[in-house]
Length: 398
Image 1 (cartoon, rainbow, N blue to C red):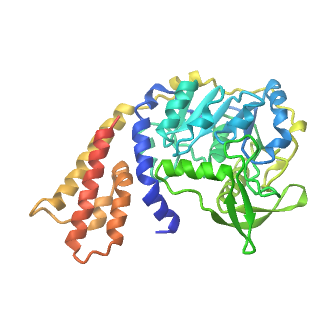
Image 2: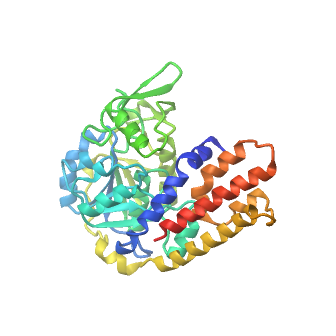
Image 3: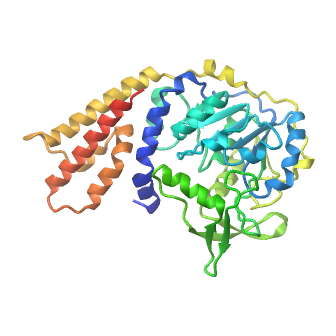
């Protein structure tokens, strides 16, 4: 198990499963965010991030929207974007409570099923919403039973928004505020964005030391959710920047850069333009300026109200699936716990019950790392953790 996998198991798998189960209570009342699209590509979609270069061209957003561009953004950028325009779409996938980010106008709020239930509550108060299931190994079965196509949107809200634009049939995707690198003064976010004020200094060892008000707020949100915070120190690498300069990006942003470059390579039918006017240069994305972009006038973006009838979700099937998953998981556990019952090998208790696995994973990993001397004690501890996780799924089933 890699350090990242262990970190996910200990800190995120349980809260993520609880978010799925809680949000599934509301999901049937909301449209799914996208439907299979095989028509001609059309329209210009701007994806606006919260990078520090947003200050250079955010004033162009009203003109671009008037001329037909669809303005899409992410929760961290929304407070800054809303000072200039009401965006058409804002997407959030945060497991921590960032509901304060969403208290600004937007035509549509798109929610990851695994986002904080508090975020879902505020988003629904604010206006129309849609949702999606993020595509990963933990959600394949969930997506199949619901009857939806998962969104393979990469490692961040920005990349998920880009992928969603592609699913909506965009002919042209234009990035703004997508620095994905530290500004020369160490700034990580645009002024007025959710985490403005976060800055990093680069030490002699090349490590970035994060600090400032924005960083403190980010840490507070993670602590409130019981999740590990952003590292105070993180590795950086030098990258080519806009205008021929050399910048530093972090291990947090580098996967987003790589994802965007792969996206451009895999979508030759989409014009990919980077109008950030700063930050890292992204292979496959044509550098341009927002003031020079003339939006296409053929956008066929679907109104969110239409989406529910295009792809209804089968929550009844999911409820039956979860009930069967719980029953089988608890039967397996009882076989270990019951005197005289069949003794399974430990790995067999982790096979085929996705929602239970996520809730039980932390406890099971703790048991496996405890190096208890008696194998039967290990098996019993595994079984108890598995049984309790299955019971929690039963209580929370939609």
